[in-house]
Every structure is written in C-alpha cells, then in structure tokens.
Image (cartoon, rainbow over all chains, first blue to last red; front, side, top):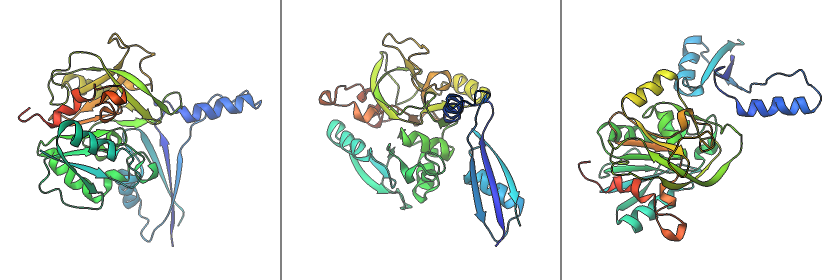
Length: 77
Length: 227
C-alpha cells in the first residue's frame, strides 16, 4: 500500500507557544544557541490512490487548518 | 423556542448548558447526539465546551465534520440562533461558520478563572443591551483567537467582534488579554449575527450560587424573538 507523509506546520507568522517552551528548555539544558523551536505534526497515511491532488484535498478538508497551518505532502510510493 | 444541546464524545459542558437553559430561562432544551442527522423541530443550537474527540488533530476539528454539524450549519445559514462556547467556539471556527481559529494560550497554561468582558456591538441578539462589563469564567488551554489582518478588519467593519477581554473598568489592556488573543477577541459573530462563538462560559454564570449571573445577559439571546 502506498504511503504518504503529510507535514503540517503552524504558519511562521503565528506564535508557537509550545515551541517557545521547548526552545527555552533546550536553552536551560545548555544548548544556548537554540534560537527557536517550532512544533508541527507528521501524519502518515496508507492510501491506495496517493495522487497529490487527492491528498491536497484531504489537507484542505481536514488535515490542516488553512487559517493557521501550512502543509507539505511527500508521497513515499 | 426549543434548543438542541449537541453532545460530542468528550463534551463536558453539555449539562451546564442544558440545566441553565431549562432552569434559569425556562427554555425547552434537548440533548442531541453528534451522530444524528436531523434537527427538525429545533429552533436553536447550543454547542457545549469540552474536549470533543479528545481534541485529536486540532480542537474542534473532528467534531466540526460530524454528521449533526451539517444540520447545525443549515440552521445557522437559515438565521436561527446558534451559540458555541469554548470547545463549541472551536467547532464553529473549524466548521467555517465563524472566521479565524483558536490556538494554544500564549503562555501555555490552562486558564481557569473569571475574566471581564466588554460587548463590542449592540447589533446581535447575544450582545444587544449589554452596556456594562460582564464577569464570566473561562476554562481553556487553547483559546488564543487568531485571524489574519484582512479578516480582523472585516470583523471590525461588519461589527462582528462580539466580546473583548478587558479589565474591571472595561479597558482593553495587555494583562487583561489573558490568552494572547488577536486584538483581545473573546467572541465573534457571523455576518448574520445569529451565530456567536466565545471562549468564556456564560452558562456557568447564570446563578448567584455560582458566583455570577452575568451570563444571563448573553444567553437571554435565546429567549429574544425577532432580535
């Protein structure tokens, strides 16, 4: 069964409060050069017809919120 | 007036809504399960707070695609009163009935406390006649309202901002904007002004035994006819 990876990320213009906390924590662990962290979502699909068009439709209808998120589609075949 | 209180798996403010409508307003309310497809006989909808579908994917995302929502959208588009509180607000945004989205509070923390609200328009059944600061509780982790600049301008131009977080004197301040919402927005209306989404819980503030009756000023909108 073909596999698809959808990477959903918060739009760069929006504050990622959880990501900020992660960056702060890394700083406290001594990784003082970490400027920022952004947390996204990786959604792996097993799907018979993995055409980008269809996956894109899935993203628009459910997997991502166009108001706050961007998405990238990677078809693994 | 008969109100459908929609029950999603993981909703937890459905009873607050039901009993407030019934006991404080004498309004007929009935629970409706999310898998139903029919709202015949109902005049209005209350979408309760909670963690529908465990907040999987995004808050309100799965609930907004559940079968009953097609009917809720139909009623909303017909102009019937619809209110979504907390998770219900998130569901309304995810469904497209209201613009914008709700993100994790700016300071990460789950916030459970009273806030002060100012009504920003008189042109809706939910905000009509509110001319003082209201004290209403919040209980949310993801209540930071976000929308782009164009949407914000449109909300302002069309008087679709229902409530802003303010201090006790009714002033918008950075401290009063408890979750970091864009432009301190606590609640928004659709263009028809019949659909209201808000993070604070008016249904938890309709009896002095609970500390405040200010929520009645908002939920009275269910009782208004021809508003």
